[in-house]
Length: 521
Image 1: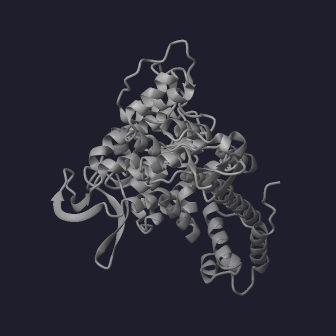
Image 2: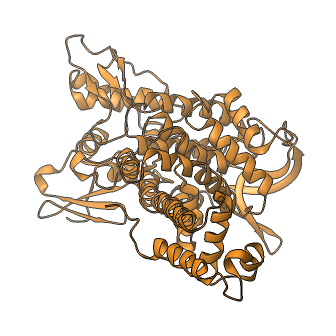
Image 3: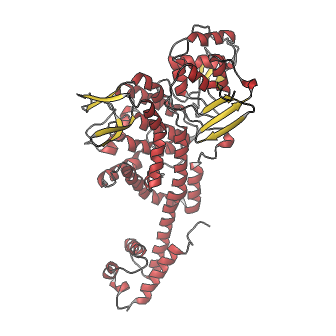
């Protein structure tokens, strides 16, 4: 009895559906009702009285009631189910909320119309998805035919999803605005603004480090300037003309290829004279429409969870990979841009997520794992669906011999990403970045100010000279270097003639950095 599958898993078996993204919920019959969860999956056991009819209607209604939704599954299912199976359900239950939702989903995912009349006008509207648990459109479109509020976050061309869970179970969803406000309360707006320039450069340098290009100083400075200039200040960064402006700001006007790519792309590496493919992005002929749909997704979800939005848009962008170059940097730029655009973070304050990612081996590994939530399972399904054949030159001038053989089938996965895992990942990164990276930077700046003031209470000097002394003493373990002696012999003379000031400065600076007195009250 416990091996009897229910709901979406049962339908996947009936219709022989293979998914790139596994269904989260596995429902089965058992003696008592219970739920077991592990590693992002859940198994639900249901007593016999919950067992539905063993057909499309029975299991789909059960899934809508009790299971996590999957847009990829819906897309594959409705391209296989007989339209008459859906139509018959609607004819039997013309006012039924689950029948109407099933009919709406059929027409939405397939673009085909069922041979049944419209729902009577006196029937109340029902939401397509539960906006209290999923990232949904802020202003749904009313579909009069089914009396359904189309609150899906995107469109048929591209509609990622994020499961937020019930409100009482959202401790994982970080409140970035509150975190930044806490920093403001602790250190003051003036100190945060002064640290913004360094944080912007730090974000740029770390973003290049993620792509193993940290030594490209000119490019680091250019990207930092682009972040400072554009973050939170572009009304529609994925519009082709604005994306081109942003790409050129990131790559420079002399970039070899700018604009939307017109060639195939995969993420991989070369090993022992052969290519290892880690992920295959949608083909060029799909990119323009999918990018347009991502713009629609971003617009439809404004006013919802800022962190979920930032994760969905930025990770959807990197999986779409619409540009020949600069995708990774713009993917991470979008995180800050959307947070600023949603008024969660002031436009002149950068949350250096790349610094958190690149700051440790674990940070890099966790970022790779977040990307692989989709790419690894995608490649498992399509491991034999590509080849390297005859070389050809694409319309954008790229020469390639890469061919993907199952574009039609893979569209169900590319278009309907489940980005719940990536949202949880980004939320954790933002928490660490605000509460550690940004807090440490603000604290360091405050302590430097205090140490500088302490030095100038002993010896008056320009700020730049005091900063140089502070830096040298910290790096030298509170020992005076030969460079300091040569630069300021009147203070750090080796003969000790001015030793009182020498010792006072060291003691004063060391006290600031080691006493802990600069921590928030």
